Image (cartoon, rainbow, N blue to C red; front, side, top):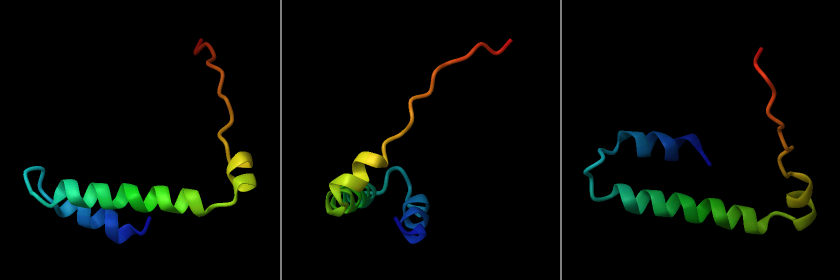
Length: 56
């Protein structure tokens, strides 16, 4: 997502009535972008599994 979306979201106050609308709009854009991606690309883009290790 473009940085202007994040900047606009950060400028909104928590009690602003437009904040939920902006959040929903952003989520819809993310989902549309994911659906347009090629299924093969999405398959290979998966995250690697991380195994926890001892810190000692």
